[in-house]
Each structure stands twice: as structure tokens, then as C-alpha cells.
Image (cartoon, rainbow, N blue to C red; front, side, top):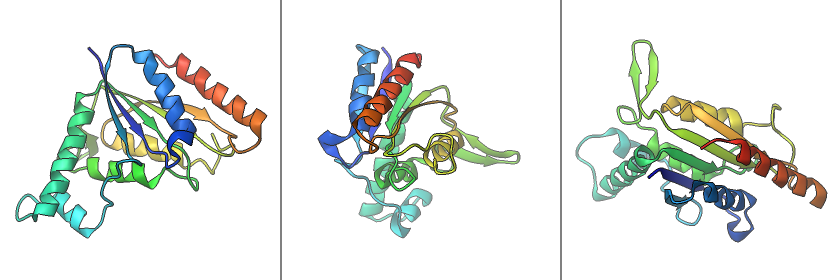
Length: 195
């Protein structure tokens, strides 16, 4: 049985178009086991000095820091168990939501999900497909204002996840007709992505 890790990151709850698109896309997986994380409803710790120290230190951790390491280990275990990772990533102020960035900060760990070698960085999470569903109020795909696509390709590739496909729902705040066309385009793109 295939295993899917699905990540929601919208702050809009039931009004979120990225979450609705993700929910509809998950139907494509039939009886697959799905692990769903709503990163806005259940936020993760923000990377600060204490969290960064916990993720780098091997010993002498406080109980709070050990809890961060345990959470990070759990998040990484979810990735390792998944065959496919589906990420709903709306664009907020030209980038991904803070909630999704917090997830990346907890799973990007030297010696665990990537390592430095003499020839550069080597990602340690491999042979997984990633599908990114990104929603935007305006039209940004392929332009200088789209920081979401290059950032996600970079950070995912950094940890070894290079089989990444995107579905774009754009112009969602540019009138009802444009929004409907943007949602329809994303649905068509998702239908075309093989799983």
C-alpha cells in the first residue's frame, strides 16, 4: 500500500483554496495510507536559538530542546515513510507561509536529511515524488515575483527530493471569472500528474 504525506499550510481554514485542492487531489490515491499535517491548525516551533541548538547538539539538551528533537525526528520519519509528498503552499507576500517554513526548518538537518561532502551537499531523502499545489491572488508563475517555485525546488532538492511537480492556481483575487479559471487550471494540472 502506498503512503502519502500531505501538508496544508494555509491560515484561511475552511476558506483555503490550496487546502480544498489538496483534499480533492488526495482522492486520486484511493486506498493509500495518508498522513495529513495541517501546519496552520497545529503550528510547529519557530526556528530560534534554542531550537537551532537542539537540532545541532547531541547531548546536554533541556527537556524542551529534547522535545524539539523528538518532533523533528517524527516529521522526518513521516517523510521517510511516504512514497508521495503533497504540499499545499499558498503564496503569502511573495513567499511560502511561515507555517510551512517552520516545517522545513525542523526537517532540514545536517547528517540526517542532508550531508556536506567534498563535492557539495548531498540530500539523503530520495526516491519520493513531491506534488506542490500553490495558490496565488495574482499572476506570478514564471515571473520575478514567483519566489515560491524556486525556493521550494531549492529546499526540496537540498534534502534529496528532486522529483517535484507543481500545480498553479493563480489570479484568485482578480475577480470571480479569473479565480474560477485559476482553480480549473490547477485541477487540470493535477489530473495530468501521474502518481
